[in-house]
Image (tube, rainbow, N blue to C red):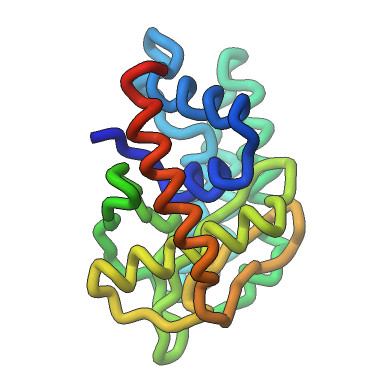
Length: 209
């Protein structure tokens, strides 16, 4: 059974067929070689954000994270972009929130026959609520429709998995947009139907990609 992330599915549902084929090809056949085993490009940023909140919103954690980034020529671009993303988070509205990280095991549910993985970058308590937060550390703000679909599909899958979650508890910390994206409404049935039909489409395409 093919397996993809909820972010990829949300993006996939908004793309024309040619782009969908490219997305699946990149997912099924990533570049060969050592790069396959490297940690995600922005993992240092994600770790810094988690440690920042775990330390009670300690700015020194972010400074330390930037200082500890690799200094090698081979890592130059990755280091530059992670430093930029961590600095962006420092000035992001989310940095002022009282979020306490909690343990969470990623959830994988079937959507039209394809396994879809929901793995928020940060799961944290905020007052009496638990928030499921995705981080966009890239240079480009998320397309509003893609962002909304990530939230809607994530909410649906977490609910189906038995997670006690309310509307508005899934959020995206969009660094380039300098805002947190949420959707305090019930997921659109049309989006969930589209996700299911696209899941079926992925299953059909997978063997021939």
